[in-house]
Length: 347
Image (cartoon, rainbow, N blue to C red):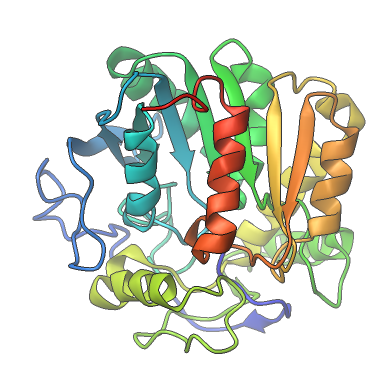
């Protein structure tokens, strides 16, 4: 989730660009869909492609074979907003050596998947239900036929919110979920989440749903490391910004009013007590103690009220825990090892 802590509206006409994130000539290739840079090598045993969503959108996916022993199943990695498969290459490698197959995909509207409006740099979606439907179809068409059970979810921020939305319907498929810094509530805004929902809903209702809100267009030059709210690790920050600097078609600008409204509605829905009672998948919430993007307190409160939930807060970590310095990142991986059955044994 890459938008700032201040809520503002950026008014700019649509650019009229294509809604395909990757150039059409690269889209059909099974060998060129994943992008390498020297600082971020592609994990071994990668198979990538597109599946066609039920509304015709092309969704980029990848799966990675296991490297370690014993073989322990499959982890489905669900990225956050404005993240792509490439950003998780390091984590995918960690999971492979632990004995897991890994499957992942880019959410519609970002990464290498089809964009949803004329300007491909605007982070846009009408409803998070579209994300849930894509996740369910990904399970049906990619995970179940080609990946080994049992299945686990490892999700970050927006991806973790989608995982919670999907959880009631996936109880017989997913054994456990590890949810890292889930987007339940923004950390610092001048408005409450309810007010954010109302404002973004009003803009959406008046036909202004494609306006930027909470951020502006993507810039070619990345923000400097100093002052970033995502990670304390300079090397990983440079690596991640280099991906988007060299391949800007994988990135996004700020979210639209429609996206913010959809996220607010989804966050309110999963916090409803009746909905929470339907979540029966054992879930580990990993919160960042120094998170300035989403509310750590909201995560801790949610996990304490969820019958199937438990929470670990990593003091000093910023929002992107899996992109953090080793001192924080290794705590998250150790918690994963302890929570996901079988991973505490040697490879």
